[in-house]
Image (cartoon, rainbow, N blue to C red; front, side, top):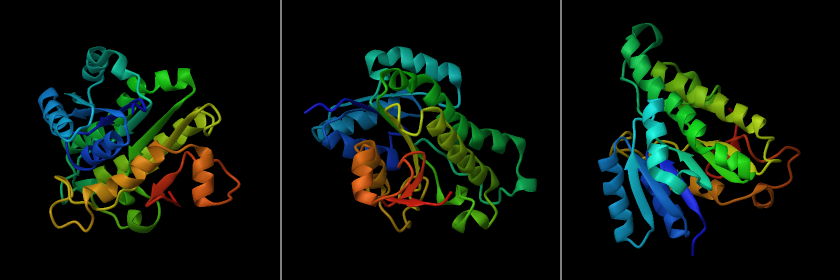
Length: 247
Protein backbone atom coordinates (compact mmCIF):
# COMPACT_ATOMS: atom_id res chain seq x y z
CA UNK A 1 0.00 0.00 0.00
CA UNK A 2 1.40 3.40 -1.00
CA UNK A 3 -0.48 6.42 0.29
CA UNK A 4 2.11 8.92 -0.87
CA UNK A 5 5.01 10.72 0.78
CA UNK A 6 5.19 12.08 4.31
CA UNK A 7 8.13 14.37 5.03
CA UNK A 8 9.03 14.85 8.69
CA UNK A 9 11.54 17.40 9.95
CA UNK A 10 13.05 16.37 13.26
CA UNK A 11 12.23 12.85 12.15
CA UNK A 12 15.45 11.25 13.35
CA UNK A 13 14.36 11.01 16.98
CA UNK A 14 11.63 11.68 19.51
CA UNK A 15 8.12 12.57 18.44
CA UNK A 16 9.16 13.09 14.83
CA UNK A 17 10.51 9.54 14.63
CA UNK A 18 7.31 8.22 16.23
CA UNK A 19 5.22 10.12 13.67
CA UNK A 20 7.32 8.63 10.88
CA UNK A 21 6.79 5.13 12.26
CA UNK A 22 3.02 5.59 12.58
CA UNK A 23 2.63 7.03 9.08
CA UNK A 24 4.98 4.41 7.67
CA UNK A 25 2.86 1.64 9.13
CA UNK A 26 -0.17 3.32 7.53
CA UNK A 27 1.42 2.90 4.11
CA UNK A 28 3.21 6.19 3.49
CA UNK A 29 6.74 6.51 2.22
CA UNK A 30 8.37 8.51 5.01
CA UNK A 31 11.22 10.95 4.51
CA UNK A 32 12.90 11.40 7.89
CA UNK A 33 15.02 14.51 8.15
CA UNK A 34 17.53 14.98 10.95
CA UNK A 35 19.90 17.78 11.84
CA UNK A 36 22.34 16.26 9.37
CA UNK A 37 22.31 13.62 6.67
CA UNK A 38 23.82 10.89 8.84
CA UNK A 39 21.20 11.14 11.60
CA UNK A 40 18.40 11.04 9.06
CA UNK A 41 19.85 8.01 7.32
CA UNK A 42 20.32 6.14 10.59
CA UNK A 43 16.68 6.75 11.48
CA UNK A 44 15.55 5.59 8.05
CA UNK A 45 17.59 2.41 8.40
CA UNK A 46 15.86 1.65 11.70
CA UNK A 47 12.44 2.22 10.14
CA UNK A 48 13.24 0.09 7.11
CA UNK A 49 14.27 -2.74 9.43
CA UNK A 50 10.68 -2.81 10.70
CA UNK A 51 9.25 -3.01 7.18
CA UNK A 52 8.60 0.70 6.60
CA UNK A 53 9.48 2.42 3.32
CA UNK A 54 11.77 5.17 4.61
CA UNK A 55 14.38 7.55 3.22
CA UNK A 56 16.70 9.59 5.41
CA UNK A 57 18.52 12.87 4.95
CA UNK A 58 19.03 16.06 6.92
CA UNK A 59 19.80 19.75 7.09
CA UNK A 60 20.03 22.67 9.47
CA UNK A 61 16.49 23.92 8.96
CA UNK A 62 17.37 27.33 10.36
CA UNK A 63 19.54 27.77 7.25
CA UNK A 64 17.54 28.58 4.12
CA UNK A 65 20.36 27.61 1.75
CA UNK A 66 20.83 24.20 3.40
CA UNK A 67 17.13 23.46 3.07
CA UNK A 68 17.19 24.53 -0.58
CA UNK A 69 20.07 22.10 -1.18
CA UNK A 70 18.17 19.36 0.64
CA UNK A 71 15.12 19.94 -1.54
CA UNK A 72 17.24 19.48 -4.66
CA UNK A 73 18.74 16.23 -3.31
CA UNK A 74 15.33 14.79 -2.52
CA UNK A 75 14.00 15.25 -6.04
CA UNK A 76 10.38 13.98 -6.34
CA UNK A 77 10.33 13.20 -2.60
CA UNK A 78 10.42 16.97 -2.01
CA UNK A 79 6.76 17.09 -3.10
CA UNK A 80 5.07 15.36 -0.16
CA UNK A 81 1.40 14.80 0.54
CA UNK A 82 2.14 15.38 4.23
CA UNK A 83 4.59 17.81 5.84
CA UNK A 84 5.24 17.47 9.57
CA UNK A 85 7.40 20.15 11.17
CA UNK A 86 8.73 18.45 14.28
CA UNK A 87 12.28 19.76 14.65
CA UNK A 88 12.73 21.77 17.83
CA UNK A 89 15.03 22.72 20.68
CA UNK A 90 14.43 23.79 24.27
CA UNK A 91 15.84 27.04 25.63
CA UNK A 92 18.18 27.17 28.60
CA UNK A 93 16.59 26.60 32.00
CA UNK A 94 16.99 30.18 33.27
CA UNK A 95 16.25 31.88 29.95
CA UNK A 96 14.00 34.68 31.09
CA UNK A 97 13.33 37.60 28.77
CA UNK A 98 15.94 39.95 30.27
CA UNK A 99 18.44 37.23 31.14
CA UNK A 100 18.87 35.55 27.80
CA UNK A 101 21.87 36.17 25.56
CA UNK A 102 21.28 37.18 21.93
CA UNK A 103 22.90 33.96 20.73
CA UNK A 104 20.36 31.92 22.69
CA UNK A 105 17.46 33.84 21.15
CA UNK A 106 18.99 33.24 17.71
CA UNK A 107 19.51 29.53 18.36
CA UNK A 108 16.00 28.77 19.60
CA UNK A 109 14.09 31.01 17.20
CA UNK A 110 16.27 29.76 14.35
CA UNK A 111 15.30 26.13 14.84
CA UNK A 112 11.79 26.43 16.25
CA UNK A 113 10.43 29.26 14.10
CA UNK A 114 12.63 29.79 11.04
CA UNK A 115 12.89 26.02 10.71
CA UNK A 116 9.14 25.88 10.15
CA UNK A 117 9.22 28.88 7.82
CA UNK A 118 11.94 27.25 5.72
CA UNK A 119 10.13 23.91 5.65
CA UNK A 120 6.95 25.61 4.44
CA UNK A 121 8.82 27.71 1.88
CA UNK A 122 10.49 24.71 0.26
CA UNK A 123 8.01 21.85 0.66
CA UNK A 124 4.51 23.35 0.82
CA UNK A 125 4.28 25.03 -2.62
CA UNK A 126 3.63 21.72 -4.46
CA UNK A 127 0.73 21.03 -2.09
CA UNK A 128 -0.77 24.43 -2.78
CA UNK A 129 -0.36 23.93 -6.53
CA UNK A 130 -1.97 20.48 -6.34
CA UNK A 131 -4.71 21.76 -4.02
CA UNK A 132 -4.08 18.80 -1.75
CA UNK A 133 -1.96 18.25 1.33
CA UNK A 134 -1.56 18.28 5.08
CA UNK A 135 0.76 20.51 7.10
CA UNK A 136 1.16 19.87 10.83
CA UNK A 137 3.55 21.78 13.08
CA UNK A 138 4.56 20.64 16.54
CA UNK A 139 3.75 23.47 18.91
CA UNK A 140 3.73 23.33 22.72
CA UNK A 141 1.38 24.15 25.56
CA UNK A 142 4.05 26.58 26.78
CA UNK A 143 3.45 28.65 23.65
CA UNK A 144 -0.24 29.20 24.31
CA UNK A 145 -1.82 32.47 25.47
CA UNK A 146 -3.78 30.53 28.06
CA UNK A 147 -3.23 27.79 30.62
CA UNK A 148 0.41 26.62 30.84
CA UNK A 149 1.49 29.37 28.46
CA UNK A 150 0.99 32.13 31.00
CA UNK A 151 3.50 31.20 33.71
CA UNK A 152 6.62 32.92 32.33
CA UNK A 153 10.21 31.74 31.98
CA UNK A 154 11.86 29.79 29.14
CA UNK A 155 11.28 32.93 27.09
CA UNK A 156 12.85 31.95 23.76
CA UNK A 157 11.06 28.61 23.71
CA UNK A 158 7.66 30.04 24.65
CA UNK A 159 7.97 32.90 22.18
CA UNK A 160 9.11 30.58 19.39
CA UNK A 161 6.13 28.27 19.87
CA UNK A 162 3.68 31.19 20.13
CA UNK A 163 5.12 32.43 16.84
CA UNK A 164 4.66 28.98 15.28
CA UNK A 165 1.01 29.12 16.33
CA UNK A 166 0.63 32.49 14.61
CA UNK A 167 2.43 31.23 11.52
CA UNK A 168 0.18 28.19 11.22
CA UNK A 169 -2.98 30.23 11.75
CA UNK A 170 -1.85 32.73 9.12
CA UNK A 171 -0.90 30.05 6.58
CA UNK A 172 -4.26 28.33 7.11
CA UNK A 173 -5.99 31.61 6.27
CA UNK A 174 -3.81 32.10 3.20
CA UNK A 175 -4.76 28.63 1.95
CA UNK A 176 -8.48 29.24 2.40
CA UNK A 177 -9.18 27.40 5.67
CA UNK A 178 -9.12 24.07 3.83
CA UNK A 179 -11.25 25.21 0.89
CA UNK A 180 -8.26 24.83 -1.44
CA UNK A 181 -7.43 21.32 -0.36
CA UNK A 182 -4.54 22.03 2.03
CA UNK A 183 -5.18 21.57 5.75
CA UNK A 184 -2.82 23.37 8.12
CA UNK A 185 -2.74 22.73 11.87
CA UNK A 186 -0.64 22.82 15.03
CA UNK A 187 -0.42 20.19 17.76
CA UNK A 188 0.47 20.32 21.44
CA UNK A 189 1.98 16.87 22.06
CA UNK A 190 2.55 17.57 25.76
CA UNK A 191 5.59 16.50 27.78
CA UNK A 192 6.94 13.31 26.22
CA UNK A 193 9.85 10.97 26.85
CA UNK A 194 12.21 12.16 24.11
CA UNK A 195 15.80 13.42 23.99
CA UNK A 196 14.42 16.91 24.68
CA UNK A 197 11.68 15.93 27.13
CA UNK A 198 13.83 13.60 29.20
CA UNK A 199 13.27 10.08 30.57
CA UNK A 200 10.84 11.08 33.33
CA UNK A 201 8.20 12.75 31.15
CA UNK A 202 4.69 11.36 31.68
CA UNK A 203 3.95 10.48 28.05
CA UNK A 204 5.65 8.33 25.45
CA UNK A 205 6.77 9.69 22.10
CA UNK A 206 4.15 7.44 20.48
CA UNK A 207 1.41 9.12 22.52
CA UNK A 208 2.73 12.53 21.51
CA UNK A 209 2.67 11.49 17.85
CA UNK A 210 -0.87 10.10 17.72
CA UNK A 211 -2.74 13.36 17.08
CA UNK A 212 -0.19 14.39 14.45
CA UNK A 213 -0.64 11.12 12.56
CA UNK A 214 -4.43 11.40 12.90
CA UNK A 215 -4.52 14.93 11.46
CA UNK A 216 -2.23 13.86 8.64
CA UNK A 217 -4.74 11.23 7.53
CA UNK A 218 -8.08 13.01 7.97
CA UNK A 219 -10.02 15.42 5.79
CA UNK A 220 -12.53 18.02 6.94
CA UNK A 221 -15.44 15.58 6.76
CA UNK A 222 -13.61 12.98 8.87
CA UNK A 223 -12.78 15.63 11.44
CA UNK A 224 -16.37 16.87 11.48
CA UNK A 225 -17.61 13.35 12.15
CA UNK A 226 -15.10 12.92 14.97
CA UNK A 227 -15.40 16.31 16.67
CA UNK A 228 -19.10 16.89 16.07
CA UNK A 229 -21.03 19.77 14.55
CA UNK A 230 -19.19 23.08 14.66
CA UNK A 231 -19.75 26.24 12.65
CA UNK A 232 -16.14 26.73 11.51
CA UNK A 233 -13.67 24.78 9.33
CA UNK A 234 -11.75 22.16 11.27
CA UNK A 235 -8.32 23.37 10.22
CA UNK A 236 -6.07 26.27 11.16
CA UNK A 237 -6.45 25.10 14.76
CA UNK A 238 -4.45 24.00 17.77
CA UNK A 239 -5.05 20.36 18.72
CA UNK A 240 -4.32 18.20 21.74
CA UNK A 241 -5.31 14.52 22.00
CA UNK A 242 -7.58 14.90 18.94
CA UNK A 243 -9.43 17.80 20.53
CA UNK A 244 -9.39 21.50 19.70
CA UNK A 245 -7.83 23.70 22.39
CA UNK A 246 -7.55 27.46 22.70
CA UNK A 247 -4.50 29.28 21.45
